[in-house]
Length: 387
Image (cartoon, rainbow, N blue to C red; front, side, top):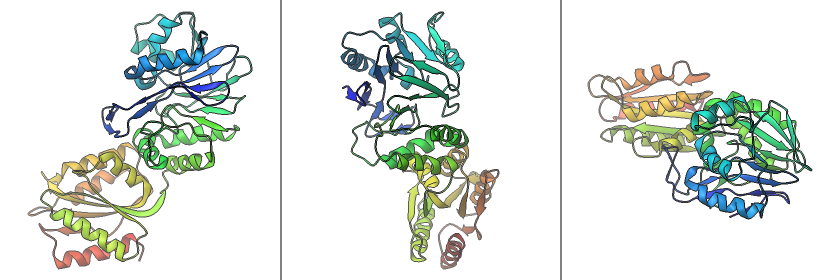
């Protein structure tokens, strides 16, 4: 269904309500939106295509928006298949259409498709403009947000920023859910590694007068833009969003889980503003990553396993490292029956991360939690909370 953004701009994207696993790994119970936009001016412009899962519906939306007109330009901001998946179909329908992108765009295009684009491209660089009549589109490179070819586009007439994957979220455009939660999970897991690059893009955006943000996923943002930009400033600088503690545990037979839940109780009793807890063996790992970045403190509780650490914890820490986890205080609880190894393994995995403060003491449990362990947990909680 076509949705008007401004008098000249429409969103012709598709809400995919059938997909349950985005990019083969992220749970999306409320589907996914693949946004694509049309600018109707003296020349017509399509801003990105959609995933091939949605090509047929997207072409219907495009036909409705065009009302018999042709497409003069396709701006390719991002070549990932959920946005570039319908390029060939559009080219077949409009063979005289010009493809707009940068050098890296067209190198990738040839990798995805066996295609002859000789004489069909307009290569743009940082700050270049394209006049379509009343609208002037200006292009800004956004490498590694979150692919190297990414660029964003600013429409000077309607003050619209087409932000590629920036400011996107999981879920369809009309999903009845809080934007922040699913936008945070999307950002931390997909763009989180590239905070420095996102910061560079935000600096470019700060020089523009923006009334509307049109991302490639999720709803169009047209009100309270300072809120959304402020969230991106926090997330991309790796600062904690909320004062609080995430207790993340990986337990084999339940004894480590018991200690983790006791730690949550102790932290709450000692006045922690917010304490969240996640079972790394059963809960959504990507929500756990989201919460690790959201809160200022993290407690890791894990069983020893194969002279290392239980795999669910290992997986979690590898994901945090991959996303440039930093600027946090971390407490460690290990469990082991004959040769506890989880603690040293977790410490080793945290080495090299920026501005990580390991709280003391590390708590070692031998098989099952005892009274002395509770005293140690209380001491660790004091250390975590600065008491």
